[in-house]
Image (tube, rainbow, N blue to C red):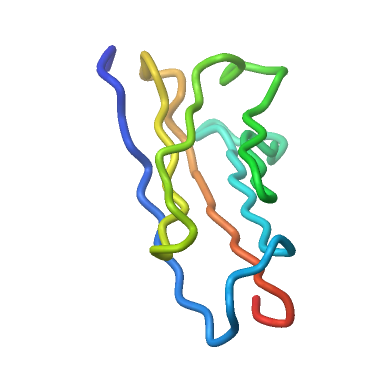
Length: 93
């Protein structure tokens, strides 16, 4: 709680990494409810501009190294939930 936390995500692709590669991080609260996209990457990072993670997510990954990790600033117990990292590198998913 309170310290920056890194959410690790790594991937492998049998195809070269191109600008078509996309990364999506989604979040569902522990208490249930709607799944929400909190981070998107395609050539450049697009952290969410709305919701509880606004201005708290930073890109710490490196797609060339198969790393799709993000960091969250100032986590609290209310951030508890399920975080899912999805990487697509067409035609690979």
